[in-house]
Length: 610
Ligand code: PRX
Image (cartoon, rainbow, N blue to C red; front, side, top):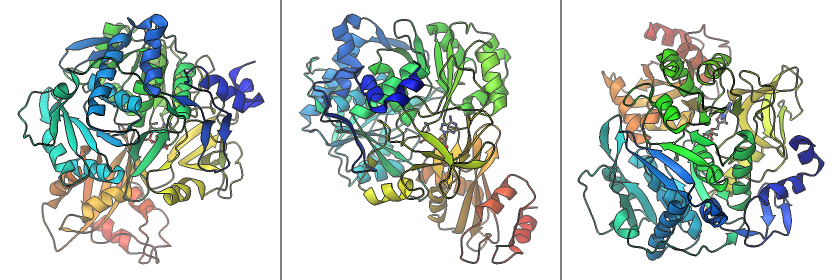
């Protein structure tokens, strides 16, 4: 019986079997309680410690000397950390955090570069039942601050600075700005760059807090539904949503998918996921999935072109990477740099290639397969979201793959494509992707906002989770993802809301009105294009506005283009018609303008931009 049939035959038993791959302090009474839908309870009454599962149990199984992390710094320094060492480091960090008086359920914000301490800090939180909220290093102090405030974090763990493209970039000043006047009682600072920092009573060096602690710590078990982390993601409104994940179901699905989708062989594989721990991919496929499976992985601190464009291939060669998991935007960048770069390295260790974060165009898929995978590595195109916690739609290696298609829901997962009224569409017709059965790693809510949770995901189609993506079936019944159908952009695999960028723009004194669209971009998938109406001819504002957005949200949200226009196209009810602006941004003939309140607006815009 294959996995699909097994899961279809008895879904609960299928998931129970996956959960039993973990170590539980006490077992569950029911696999799933869906009576309070859409808030699920999985493995009801079961108890476990997530960090114990990711670290200690491997050491107890005699695998203490297995390398958990091959860490590679941007400047070429490296460190191998075994599971036994990881256990000691996580224990010390847990003892350190406990000494600050933190108790289970407290929130800890983390903003760190890709250094081992990021993984250790997350696991130390998990070990103590603290809820981490990791904030990507590319977010501004203002964005960090709003996340700290929303979750009422008691501690922020950050660094003095980080290395980016060969230079040291300070982080501590931003952290100081972010925590001032918030609930944060302590800022714990990892020394990374050695740059001088301002210090206050609230601050503590990580090494002072952690190094002298005992390297043993007895983990307590927590309920399967104990909150594990909050991760903020963009939605259709300006305010990011704190997506809440819990322990047992999340870890079960992260570990299961990491194992089956990559056909993981923990004793021999060297796995590398190029994401940052600040995103969900880093949570599920750097920290929790691979470590729960006892995998050996590479973690790389730097950018792919530092110090040269062959850096990733050099790392694959150096460590004999067998599984490589990255985003289409990077594959398209590699394409631009040229096939002779990977060709100069020995990539023969590679066995499975993965893609995530945005639809992969067939051209990039084929290039990936040929120039990185030498035509012999299966590519798994994995569709999922911050909200789903783990992979949902993906081929399994060994299946016949199709360039550009994520193909089918994984065993145990229910997905379907429906039309406006919730009826499944036929082959070739475009519809909305929905998830029609609860899954173990599903979000349990939006932090502090149960109503928004129901409204955003569960109100569009009764009984189904609405993912926000368009999709279609081909004639074989395989699923093709077509991108977001809401006002969320996908820039280099990063989710950014148009409204969030618009709010940042109008917060600038010279902007009267702003409308933002995601325009197709050859490398980044989408690029941010902003249309702004200025207050009384503020000349030279364009560059300043781009920087203003970077300052408000972070460099990842910096618009590719800011176009100054005299008017914005609006419907009679005052809604901005982004579709028309997208036509302009993508240099297309402008589509149907009959619903515009003033049909001459588009001519005005075109004339102004000519
Ligand atoms: O539009 C889909 C796209 O990324 C969105 C989720 O973004 P985020 O929560 O940041 O998580 C990204 C990493 C899991 C989805 O709604 N997306 C993600 N993976 C794919 C994808 N689109 C097409 N194909 C994929 N494989």
